[in-house]
Image (cartoon, rainbow, N blue to C red):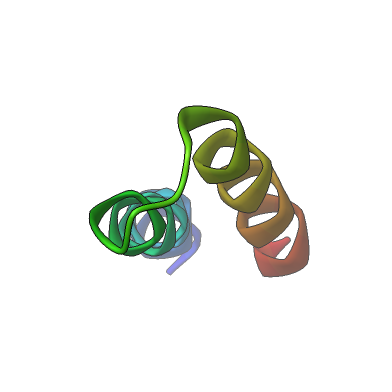
Amino acid sequence: MDLIALVVLPLAAISYSLVYLLAGGGLFGAVVIFFLAKMLGR
């Protein structure tokens, strides 16, 4: 069960960052969103 969480949570954080980038956001904002989503997932 822990292994699934270790794989799924980073993928969810990456997807939020990609959505932000595709919506016209910058690279710095995508990195910030990635780390925020990763921290909230813990």
